[in-house]
Amino acid sequence: MFPEYAVITQLQEKYNLYNPEDFYIISVQHLLESTGSMFETFINIGFKPENIFLTGKLYSTNEETKEKLKSLGINVFDSTIPQKLGSYSESLEHDVAEMWKQLAAKIKPQNKIIVLDDGGYAIKNASNELVKNHAVFGIEQTTSGVKIAYNDVKFPVIDLAESAAKVLIEPPIVSESVTIQLGGIIEELMPRKIGIIGYGHIGKAIAKELKSKYQVLVYDNISNELPQEDKIAGVVYCRSKDEIYNQSDVLIGATGQDISDLNWLTSSTGDKTLISVSSGDIEFRKLLKACKPYLTEKMENPLQVLHLKTKQQHKLNILRGGMVANFTGTRHSSPGKIIQMTRGLLFSAVIQILRDNQLLSKKNNPVMLDPEFQKEVVALWFNDQPERKNDYPENMLLGFDDIEWIKHNSKGSYILPMKKSTAI
Image (cartoon, rainbow, N blue to C red; front, side, top):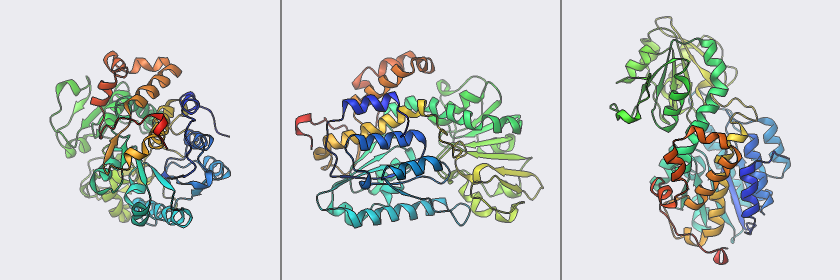
């Protein structure tokens, strides 16, 4: 039903040796075509579709993909529409709570649960009763979600977000996806200067991608003084949020936290466009909650461009209702062929739980994604797209041949894998 991707297909062929019939999956994911391929693979290796509970994210869900997932027999929950600007997290938490409620009504005493999460909402809102009475295992693929996992989680969570493969290989993939989806929009805006707040792996990759066409300014909200080796030739590094905001025509938020300032509504300098490439509506949440009196058009769609007029009569536009702008609702908001590496890592994390659940059940903290799996997924991805090696330095490519190097560059507790004969 869904396309086959080389990485996932080869992993399925190799690891189609476990019996996951007693496992339930509860998941928040971007419902893209490649996500459909991953869940179809889960069914192919033995997960019962009626034991999978899945919801998407309002800003990224492709309707055709959602309906095809339902036709597989998966319990797919429609996204609740936020009633107010800046309240997306509340809507998603409502959907997650409903999933947990329906799972609880169906689960049997011997069943185990895998929480396959994107943003920490399913992990944070896990049913205390189910966690108490069942073996529960989490997988988190975002940095913001991992922060939740490191706080007060009562079950083991595989820290996929801070695995070497995710941190080091994915940023160019994300920046390419951003430029594919937003490139035309940014060109139409004809900006003189583009500001990027957040100089983590994603922000840095986007700066590299855009600097050939635009003057790029960067402000890192964590470290004002960046090491020289982290700087990119031709990029201007600002020393404050005010400085980068005042100078930029387009401002991209890539921090995973609220960077907005209410002063932008009252003392803005010139016309601006705000773009989020972070999770949900978090980058500009404070601004979103306060901007209604400044809207120049009626709100009809939670994903419409918000057109504001500041007190100085400057235009302040916010793409996609303040939510992640590089997802557009198409099947390939992140092209399947390049994002299959991330899907492969998620699949591997599920296999790690199937194989090692007896060991993992003794942990209540973030666990490292098995370095062997990371090595394998990265190798499969490069085998499928050897030209991608040109995007990475030679020492990094060599590093992914070295298990100890992968361990050193990954976070979470390392657990020596169980032998196949003792799994499940």
